Amino acid sequence: MSGRFTHCDAAGNAAMVDVSAKPATVRGATARARVVMQPATLAMITEGSAKKGDVLGVARLAGIMAAKRTADLIPLCHPLALSAVAVDLAPAPPDAVEIAATVRTTGPTGVEMEALTAASVAALTVYDMCKAVDRAMRIEALRVVHKSGGKSGEFAQE
Image 1 (cartoon, helix red, strand yellow):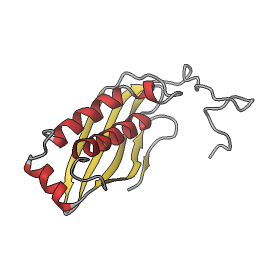
Image 2 (cartoon, helix red, strand yellow):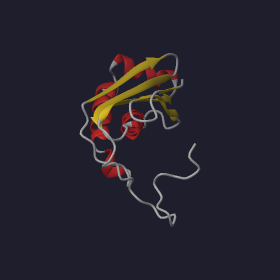
Image 3 (tube, helix red, strand yellow):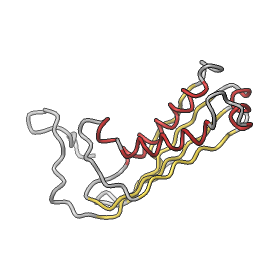
Image 4 (cartoon, helix red, strand yellow):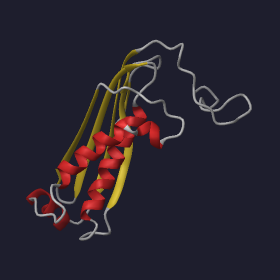
């Protein structure tokens, strides 16, 4: 740990990091999240009987779209040309949907924020599409589980 936040200038003010001198390298990140719900809600999702339609399909698209808009949402994020975004949603019986979002680019800065944004928006979309039948759903365990590329190299956790 460096001892100072990279998004602060010498006076402590918020500032965008200057990445112009950093080399473009292949970078990737995977973030995960979990939406916990009533077993009947998960059954509705897996049976395809949700009133709003294909919950997992819509959430997948929402996550992909969100990754591409991360810099519009997070003030100090750099706009990045993403090479790939994959959002996987899987039922985790008896009462959850597991989400994994993986993002790749070749550039001077990492894609952890894009992966986190994709996973969180996918989770929010599951909630939105099912809230009429299950307001007690919980979005949990949003975290980066893998990061590669750049000066800091590889990072992995579950």
